[in-house]
Length: 146
Image (cartoon, rainbow, N blue to C red; front, top):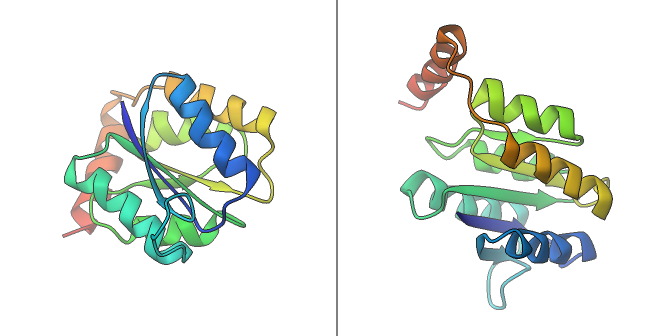
């Protein structure tokens, strides 16, 4: 899977995220502070990562900033993106399962390496629900983009 990753700061957890995604066999496209010459502002780099998902050049994205809030807001402004700020594995599982989230937002401040592994395990294990009500809610979100 091709994963677009952004971070507004070159923090150890962001570097660990890149390495962990590659270790899991994903192709990683870094943005922001993780790529020399990129604009590291959270709004700019989160948008860049999210646009790759919306364009279909990335399967999913992970966007990071100090709290994760700004990164998730910026990513959610891109039509077709459903970004979820996840601080634990249960939330990551639900975001993928019920919301069919395609962008994971993380806090650089709150996410430790062990917690990051748990969140990624849940994120990549969960599959979007095929329940009619869940699908209609996701479709409704898509209509809001228009």
